[in-house]
Image 1 (cartoon, rainbow, N blue to C red):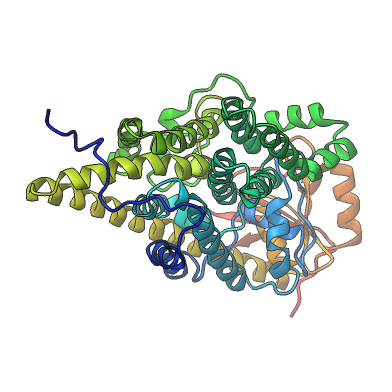
Image 2 (image 1 turned 180 degrees about the vertical axis):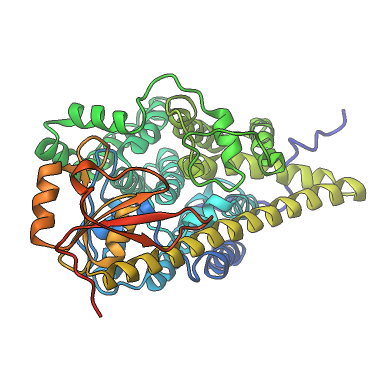
Length: 504
């Protein structure tokens, strides 16, 4: 019978035991470190220079920033990313320094996550998986950003690897501790994602032999509870309980339920960081081809692993965890943001890379097939880099526009202590050193109209209005001032309270 190249073992791909020689460890590091280094370099070149903080980033950073009041922190958010950026944000307001710090930290965390797996999957497969994951434009874009999703992805990749190592070897206590710590990090960043991560791992723990089972579920649950502790405490202190906070978080996200969003996520891959509402035609189908191919590659990876008991369990558990992390965003949230699926992509890259490795081996002796496969991979990566540069360029344009707006508001007398409300209030307030306050009614409502009017009587205040929208009734008599246009030429204006007096 002819050998099936998809399931044939990879030559020279030895899974090193815990007692691997130092030479083997150095060889593995030499294969994995370049992936992390390339990831860091791509971020530093494409994303870091000149990009400004996004709206969500501003909320997270403002909680620990040295020179800006904290923005309103809504129910779905968790404070993990604020803790992560605190060592930099508390010392310097420089966005560039923050970006460099996060880019280098993300690359180091990627290397650690891949290193955890080196006893479970062939190292060349891990290097290819790292390339597939870090080559995606959302992974590149969000690496140096103060956003939690990439950190959930890296924590999930580490947690699953440590879980599998602890399940295979009861004496591997570092792996057991690593599983708990990684789950805690995921929960600290996004408690709901940690639940969907722990769910398949708890199921996998049931089939672990009894002599190795007792500690695993306890460690997973303990990690989730420790990481979720700040969110849970805040739920009781500020929302009247966990259920009340979950209900409010669901309202802000448009109501959780049966909302299949496959089509929205596919269209968002054209460079849209948020697709809400996700309207209009699918104008760039080429950007979603890899997404359509991913299920086939994952299935191929499972088939390739099925002939090896050594490979099947890690690939199967990684796939189950990846699908579990994707499920709520694909089925229960009625809009799309590519960053939501980063944890799923990190785990599904493993079976996809195994499939590609088998296909590359099978194409030996078939130059046309091998060239076609390598060309398709190169074209995919080139397109992802182009999309990354496009998204970064939009961020630079917005940063330039908002910096000009903040400078104009300063000239009009809006200086700390001050308050800003209305369109883009969070980002503008952060740049002017003001507080941002929205009137009750929206998901960021933190003050009443009367309360905001009272503040405006004591300190400079501005209400920002875009396009032809009318100002709120309580600000109609305030001084109107045109603001520099936003990217795309969208006009907007400020309504300035009498307490805001122009300077110069």
